[in-house]
Length: 94
Image 1: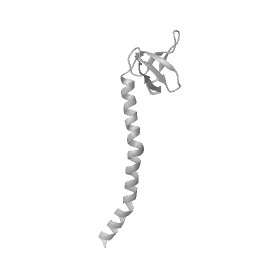
Image 2 (image 1 turned 180 degrees about the horizontal axis):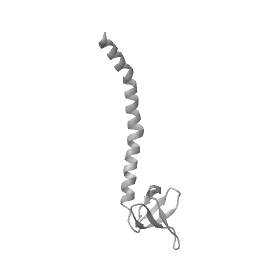
Image 3 (image 1 turned 180 degrees about the vertical axis):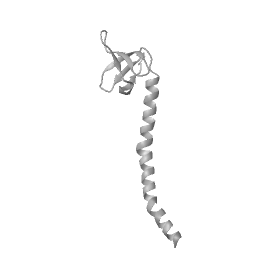
């Protein structure tokens, strides 16, 4: 009788386990992979790289530091940017 109860409990948990596995592979894992790629991209920034911020500004990296990145927006404007707000790096087309 106890084996039947354990079997019923396992059968009722099986759909939840399948749902969690699907959720993991469709949502959690790709998000972790994207976060890892962003972290690697930000860590590889160096002086002279062109970036696009999440606000849509195009800037040139002057000095990447640990807590922020010093960027030049134009000839007169130099600002500090939090690395989380770097959307992407613009690759040279040459």
